[in-house]
Image 1 (cartoon, rainbow, N blue to C red):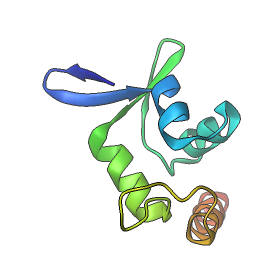
Image 2 (cartoon, one colour):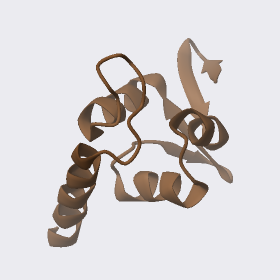
Image 3 (cartoon, rainbow, N blue to C red):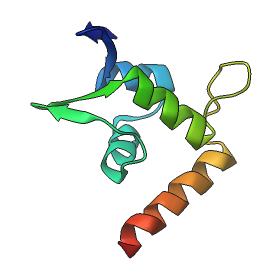
Image 4 (cartoon, helix red, strand yellow):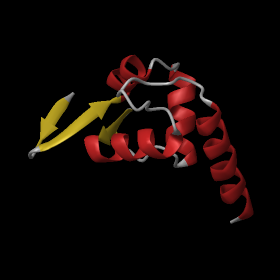
Length: 88
C-alpha cells in the first residue's frame, strides 16, 4: 500500500496478496468494473475507498473483517454486473 496525496492506494500486486486471488481474477474484477481502479502505465492502482466499496458490495468481506473468497454473494454480484454490462 502507498499513500499518494493523502489517499491510500493499492497496486495490483498488493491486491492479489490481500484478496488471495489470482492475477487473471483480479484483472477480471477491474475490467468488468466491479472493482474500480486506474491503470498507470502497466500497473493498476485502486484507492482504499474503492477497495472497501468492492468488498462490501461483493460479499467478500465477512462481519469479522476477514475475506470470504468465492462466496455465493460475490458470484451473484459478479454475474449481475456482467449481465448489466452486456445489456448496455
